[in-house]
Length: 410
Image 1: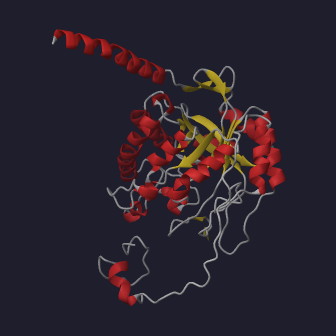
Image 2 (image 1 turned 180 degrees about the vertical axis):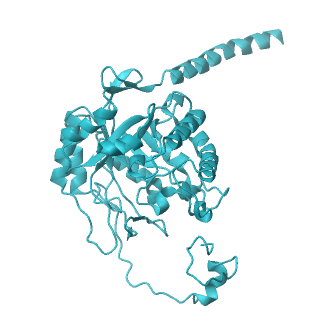
Image 3 (image 1 turned 45 degrees about the vertical axis):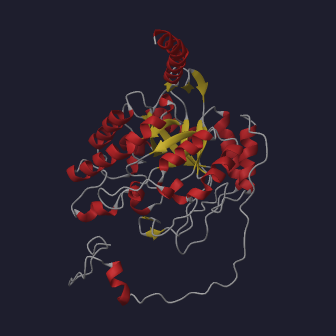
């Protein structure tokens, strides 16, 4: 027995050393800001990301890998995604993280393909998504003040972050995953409440769940007033703007909040959103390519919003104020179409990136094959009256005055 124990212990020594070495290597993974040289540092080396937005909740899981691979082949080294709270908690305490809702799998898939991830978990995300990602059931308290220190709102946010962020912590770059930075809230400077205590609350909860070494940032439009309410000390302030903006002036706005550090356009608009009853929005490829070249030539980091827009399935389309509803399509005139097809803009963007970074070699996955289905016959299922038990399982609601969907349990 002593001989066997001795042999086993000798065998275990290299294994233990190997695992310790692995842990040591994981601890060496760092992503931080070098204020002295106005850049990011990845593992101690100067780094800038060239990223594109993709929303997992707007693309069926079956297509995630195809879209991510096309993004990588365009020369991107990172992707950016929101997390839509209402997509994962449709009712209080009921959570969905499987199938098309499996955000962890989506992030791990990006990691396997060699893409870094910029995470935007809100809790408010805008994104032209239903209620900006906030669950409609929050409105059951009619006096609630969203995106503020309203106690009921904070309690719901705190509970949600306690579910989501622990799932994200192992996926942080310093923990061996792909997430390099995490956004707090979203364009908060554009909202009327301007509640710094709310931002401080989020900052503390993000650090509590993700660790003190996580790199947190904010994003706002290029106006000083927006950065006044949207930025907070300890959160790196970035800006967003499109191809029609004076880039020098835009980055000077960022410099007023962040005199030193990397220049970052967190939402460089490759297209624009659509509204019901209006023509499909487009942005000229030449303008996008020219502005992207200008941004990259300054050494700035950039995220293209969107790189693929996708689809607002079911009733997930949002609306803007004054009331303008988004359609089902979220094509966005992006480099990859709603169907994931390669466009002229895709190759123009790729050509620009190629002037600054090495683009992966090899074939690019082709556009999705199309099929003519012919005529599709529709059959009557039920009348509205016959479907009332399904539409309103809690029973009839009677009122003298029109009610909101929340008030009638929809």
